[in-house]
Image (cartoon, rainbow, N blue to C red):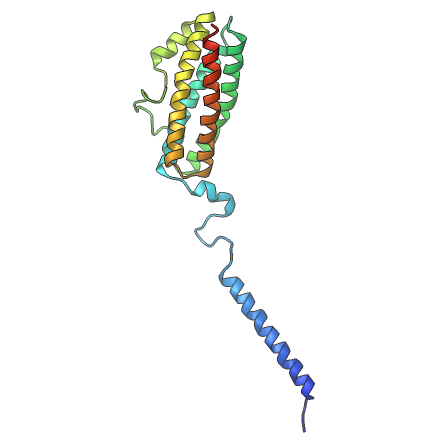
Length: 201
């Protein structure tokens, strides 16, 4: 005597097969999950987690470089008799580079690096102005100040572009490389503007 009809046994076997398949699928998902495991960064942190010595050096060198450009620009904005075109340029440089300093310092904090590790190094090839250069600009007025500022800032920008290109060649951090690319683009354009202005002074 059969306890279950034939059709009922087939249904039970089908249900068992489905349950087994579902169990295997669940186990497979648990072992190959796409989320971060212990010690791994999430997608949001991936950019900050991937960096190299070149990225650190780029940030450490660009911070004082930007700070000096901001200082030079602020000095021009405080002068009287400055060409309005030069005033506009100084305003643009300050507005662009001041926030970038904050970003660069934030990256160094994320990378457990200090911002002053490059102090005392030779900056003769990166466009940085000497104390004597800065004094010359501080003491200049009117058209002389315009000319000196533009000449110095062209060299300053050329140094920044060289450092940015080194970052693009050797750096690995996506955010740092993006900033380096932006520096090359924007400061190349500003050099063209400054060269054009110099020809009219």
